[in-house]
Image 1 (cartoon, rainbow, N blue to C red):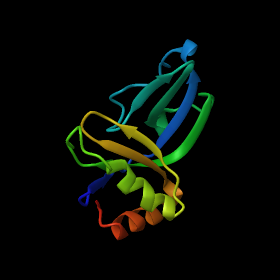
Image 2 (cartoon, rainbow, N blue to C red):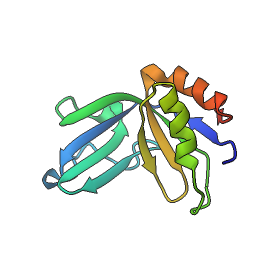
Image 3 (tube, helix red, strand yellow):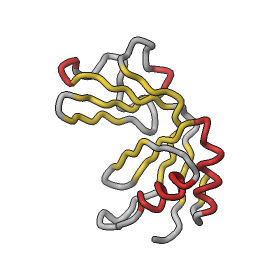
Image 4 (tube, helix red, strand yellow):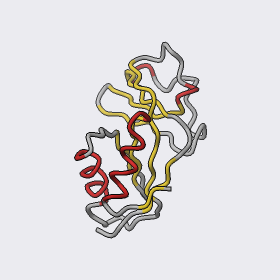
Length: 129
C-alpha cells in the first residue's frame, strides 16, 4: 500500500443512533458539512453530522469527533487502504468510526486523540494535512 494523503477537516462531528421508524430528523442535512452520512442497518439509523446541529435530545449520541479523509479518488478495487490507517491507529490506542464512499474513505477520530492519531499516521508513512 503506498503512502496516503489525509485531510483533517476542521469541523467537529457527532455520531447519532436512531430507530429507522423515526426517519431522518429535521435537523439532519446532507449538505451541512463536508462529511455527513446516513446509514440504515435493520431497524437502526446511524447519522454522522456536524456536532453543532445535533440537539441534546437527539437520541444516543457520541460527540467530539474529527474527520480524516483520504484524498481521492481511490481506485475502487484498491485493497488495504483502511487497514493501513486502522492498524497504526489501533496500535496507538486510537479508536475510530469509519465511513466509505465510492471515491474514498473517511475515519472519525475522537478529538481528544487527534494529535496521537496524526503522529501515528505520519509514523506509518502517511501525510496528514
